[in-house]
View (cartoon, rainbow, N blue to C red):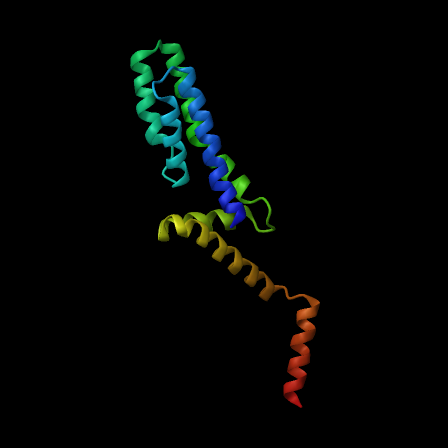
Length: 154
């Protein structure tokens, strides 16, 4: 749960800071509020594209073409950075493949909303760990199983 929380909130904060920086550089009115909206949309897994797209259109209508194109490139970078950072941050701190955590988080979110984002990852990680324990039992577990099997034969 900790790595999922850190991943979702950390990436959302990074996205909001980068978006806010771009908004301030381009002189967008209310840049801080737009950045806060980016943070909220990123936390609920909607994405910052819904804030960035109208602001890019605004910048194209008010700024010179070269800064507007540079801002468009910056906005694309900010919008897509969560696809790179989220799997990296979600996979830290646990010895489970990033794909298992990521699929659990996304699947849980799609099925149960914001609560499922956390529960889905935890359930899938537990299932993965139980599956591995079933496939590759430790020597201690094997000894206990053999001992119990011998006890039932007597």
